[in-house]
Every structure is written in C-alpha cells, then in structure tokens.
Image (tube, rainbow, N blue to C red; front, side, top):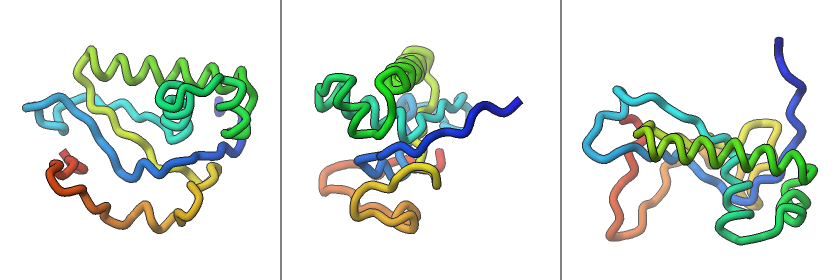
Length: 125
C-alpha cells in the first residue's frame, strides 16, 4: 500500500551525483543505500550549519516533527553505510522538491568540475 504523498521540501544545495563507497571495493558488489535529497538537507542544516531543528524545519518548509523523523532516518542510513561498508548514493532532488536557488533540473545532468588536487568521484562503480 503506497504511503501518503510527500510534501514539497525546500532543498538549499545541489548534491549532484555523489556516491561514497569503501576504498578498494567494487561498487557493483556492494549493497546500496540511497540518501534522499531532503535527508541530506536535514543533515546539512542540523549537523553542518548547527541550526536548531525548528529553524531547519522552517527553512525546508516542513514541520519540526517531520524534520526530526527525516533527520533520524538520514543519520541511520549514513551510520549504517559507514559501519557495514555499504555504498551511499545521494539522490538528486525530485520533481516534488524545490530545486536549489539558481539550479535548474537539467543542471543535475551536467558534469561537475572537480577542484584541482581532488580525485574524480566514482559515479558508476
């Protein structure tokens, strides 16, 4: 039975196509965990920017309790991927989510430039 329709969430960053996996292991052999764009945004606002949940929820356009659930799910996925050795893929914002300011949906399909001195990300391991 399908769940309720997801409300629009404001996403303040464009994760692009990002994948993290354990070093020295083929990505195709690993179980994949998908981190939704709204889960990544919740982590960014609460853990990286150190905002209170109330302010983070306001910025995302959702209730504080929804943010709390989203944040718990995101933390569980990231922790599980790190401890179990799973591949972690960050999902591109979907149609029901606001695109980051100045980013159009077609921008998600364009290759990203990589800063000098950093390795190219493994998109199709």
